[in-house]
Image (cartoon, rainbow, N blue to C red; front, side, top):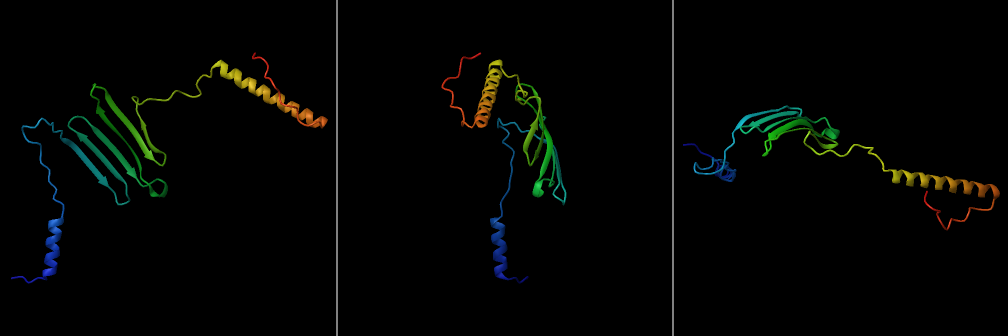
Length: 163
């Protein structure tokens, strides 16, 4: 018979009982849930913090990404892509980079802001030209007032008619 310390045995028994009990069971045979198999799950974790991940499911979802602690203060920089078929049958592929500038996805299916500079309407250009002319006139008036030492010109009480 092996003799042991009862305190050690009690601690080991408590740890065994407290350990999480993981279990996964497939849905029952009569369940309407569709089981999608994982057909590929390749993971490589390097000692320096770099990693590669490639996952593919039976319904065509693909995720591939790699990362390494190359960012500021050893933050992880990730690159990769994911793809799937949308419910309407459209193939979706998104390439991405995640770094100190945030998550930056790229895909033909993502909305894109209009190109800038976009055309500026004529009335806006006219307003800009009018404001520029007013600023130039004011600067000339102030310069003339300084030259004549009369002080700055009084502000205009009207703006004149639009041209």
